[in-house]
Image (cartoon, rainbow, N blue to C red; front, side, top):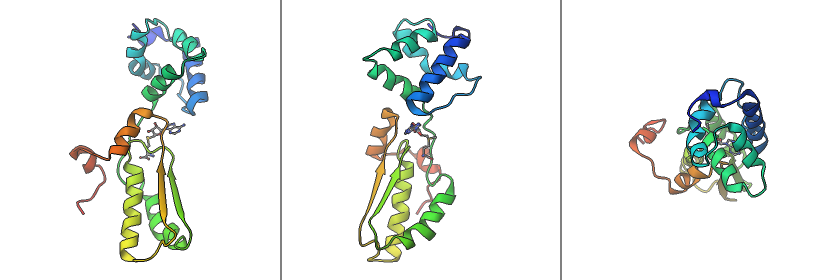
Length: 172
Ligand SMILES: C[S@@+](CC[C@H](N)C(=O)[O-])C[C@H]1O[C@@H](n2cnc3c(N)ncnc32)[C@H](O)[C@@H]1O
C-alpha cells in the first residue's frame, strides 16, 4: 500500500505530474507528493501498486479510461461557494446583461464543481429579469461542465446542506 510519500520516487512523481498536466491541465508543484499519496492511496492499494510508477504505467496503457477518470476525479479540488469572487457577478449584472438584452445569451460555467457557480449565475439573471420584465427576449441558457464526473451528479441534483448554503448565499 502506498501510505507514505516515500513510496513516491522523484521520477515517478515527475511522470505523474506530466500525466496529470496532459490529461486535464492540473499543474502540481514540486512538493505535492503528500497530496498524491493521500488522494490516491485507496486506488493504489486496490490495484496492488506499491509505487506511483506502476500507476502511471497503467494509465499510459490502452483501455485505461476508467482508471484515468478515477485518478482525475481524485486529483481535482472541488472547492466552491455561492457568488465566489464577487467581481464577475457584478460585471454580469451591471455590464453583460444590460448589453445583451437583444441577443441570445449563452453562458458556460466550464469548471462548475457542485453547481454553485452556474446556479449563482442563474440567480443574477433571474433578479435582472424580475427588475426588467420582458428583457432578455432572445432567451438565455447556462451550460455547466466539469472534468470531475463525481460532482456533476451533485450539481444536477441541486441539493445543498445548510453548511454549503451558508457559504455565500444570502437569506433572501
Ligand atoms: C476550485 S473548483 C472551482 C469551481 C467554480 N468554478 C468556482 O469558482 O467556485 C475547480 C474545478 O475545476 C475543475 N477542473 C479542473 N480541471 C478541469 C478541466 N481541465 N476541465 C474542466 N474542469 C476542470 C475541478 O474538477 C473543480 O471542480
